[in-house]
Image (tube, rainbow, N blue to C red):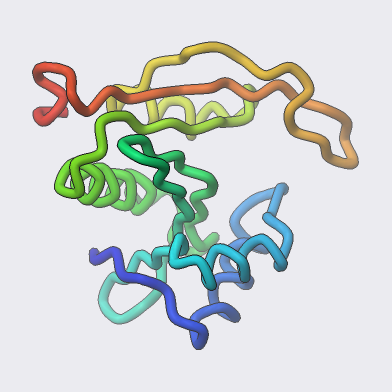
Length: 152
């Protein structure tokens, strides 16, 4: 699997993946902004786009904003491979800390992030709003400058 910068021709596939990946897709306008700003990265395996992620670097920290795996590729390890590739890219670029927010109910994502060394820093009450109501976000971080973090 390779992580590659998204190009304008890939936006239709990104939108398709996001709509099918889970119950809370990002707005199309947000994905288009991420594409324009260079923050949208595709996961390519055997010529197919299996997922994508959006991240925003600020100084020596990067925040993972969104990650989606195509429905037909879920539960096959692609999310883990995407995260491992992204972590490696962040280390190589000299980032010191990675941040993310995740729905408290998203147990699969929480398990993945914890297995990669992310720790919970706190929560944001009522952060996610959906037709089903509001949900807290857990704020997680991974310190890339910590001793041993390169071995995770």
